[in-house]
Image (cartoon, rainbow, N blue to C red; front, side, top):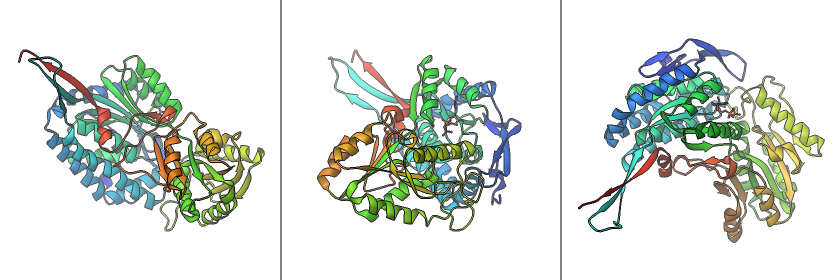
Length: 480
Ligand code: ADP
């Protein structure tokens, strides 16, 4: 991997004021299996040290003027953008997404740091009319304390900045555990945080054994909050483990996003929206459309046009020009996609295009369109997390809403219609934290991102994102 600044490729963890740990865990490039670097395999003892470092750094960090924290975060944002190319190169190497998508993610990641640099100055308190004479009621909003952040591999930078930036802005300190598949992006971000002036201990990064690190983060009473993005299964486990010390939880978990195309939709807009939503990051995002519910009257035309467009995708290594679909993250990810397709075909689905491993080998899977999907299939009930667009047929609006909501998840949802009344009616009826109406991409740092039901707790991004990291303190001043 060619970098302009080789100092960004780190093979050690950061605890307090030092880079530490012996690099033993291999980080591989999913596009070709090559080992890119190694990182330390840390466990509970080192996590405890990191928590202690975060705790020691807390008083000075929360005691700073909000404006001073804002300036440091602003510098961190600038550095992320200055090093956009290198950060994108590291990300594509360890995650596989095409370089253009990786560049886009650097910008997206940095935008959270920029937004929360601004929001740091706006953690306002409140004065409430007093309930008794001779008194005043004040409400202060204070940082919650030491935060444990656990992040996934599908957005190796953005999932970190979306948590760490508001936490630091609010005056919290953080111990972050990035995903095993993508630690290098996290460590590069750490190096830039140091250059931006984030003081020792305010941000710590530990790589290694998820169970051991997660166990310490969730059981240590010094950690006051866990912020996690990942599977619902692990989210539930972390919640259970955190119950004993009653930590605040912010959870962004799995989804099973419906994308509904009504007969009255603008066909080309619906196709473009489905492509954007379904095939972003090779279908490996928790907001990717997982079930495409298409109404009778438009079904055949939609299936035809979608397959035509999907066949235009260029599959390959993310560093090659013109590639818009990379490999899947690992063998386990690939197997899940294969299993879902095989199960669907066995239960009557038809492959319109794709449907198998690519000739490129490795973890490449052909972008796929399936028709005739039904609710009995695995892909209707679990996130496929791969490039498979499964089309379900429906007749009535109520039926589509019922199927869309018939899942324990409730993160993103999408629908396409030109009927204004239907746009409002369906938006309100969908059980989801996010609704895209005639839009397939809804992400931005300025909006509240999060789910309902088993998709999670809390919201990230927007001015609401900082609320997760502050607690209200009510002060009654009497004898006045
Ligand atoms: P995915 O299936 O997308 O990899 P996971 O929920 O398994 O989702 O992973 C998301 C993050 O959670 C990763 O950083 C992973 O290392 C971490 N993780 C997995 N298992 C545990 C665990 N038992 N305790 C703490 N963190 C975990």
